[in-house]
Length: 303
Image 1 (cartoon, helix red, strand yellow):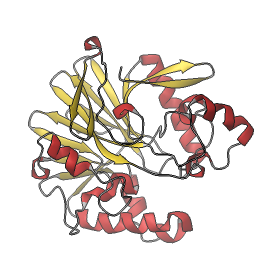
Image 2 (tube, helix red, strand yellow):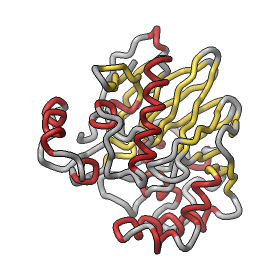
Image 3 (tube, one colour):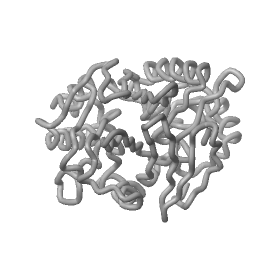
Image 4 (cartoon, helix red, strand yellow):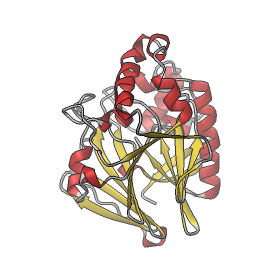
C-alpha cells in the first residue's frame, strides 16, 4: 500500500467527497456543519504473524487468497481523522511521530498539505496509547507538536499506560511500547482531560468503550443532524480477517477474546444501522461501511 495520490468516486447522496493533495490520500465526510477528513500518516510495515499469529493456517489460507495477501509484510494505512466544527480543529489520534517507523510519521506533512498549522489544532482525542496513535504528540525535539491543543483520553486507558508497573507486567514484546507511551504521557500530564465511557467529550462527539485491543480503548461516535459516523480506532483493525471472521483472535490485540467480542458487537450494529465508519488501518482512507457477507462481514470503502 505505497502512498500515492488517490481519487475516490464517492456518491453525493452519501455526503462524501474526494480530495487529493500531492502525496496524500484524503477522504471527506460532511455531517451537517461538521467536516470530517482522514489524513495519511503513512503506513506501517508489519510481519504477517503480528496479525495472523496463532490462527489455523488451513482455515486462514483461503481468506488470504480472497484478499490477495501474499507472504510478504503487511503494510496497512495509517488514517488520522480531522474534525472541523464551529472553530474547533480536532484530531483523533496524533499519528506515529518521528520515532516509530520510517514509513509512518507523515501527519505533519498531511496537515501542511491541507493548510492546517499544528498551532491551529484545538483538541487531540486519543483512542488508545499504541505508538502509531500516541507518539506523534512529540516532534523531533521532544516538544509538543500541537502546543495549543487540549488533550483528551479515556481514564482507564490513561491509568493503565501511565502506571509504572505496566511496562514490567505487559510482556517483553510490548515493554518498549509501554515505556514509550509513558514518556509521551509525561509530556501531557497536567494538560490531559480524562473521560469515561458514554461521555460527550465535545459537542456531538460521544465516547464509546471498545476494550480488547487495549484495556481502555475508545471509539467515538460523531453526530451531525440525523447522521453519525463511528471513529473506530483499532477496534476493527484490518479489512480482511477482522471483518470476514470477527470472532477469530488477532495477534495485535492485547486481550484477543475481549477484542473479538467488541468487534462482533460493533460490526453487528454498523451493518444493521448502515452507520458510516472510519478505521485507522482500513484501506481507501478508512471511510466506509460494514456489510454482512456470509457468516461474517465485509468492508465497503468510500460509501
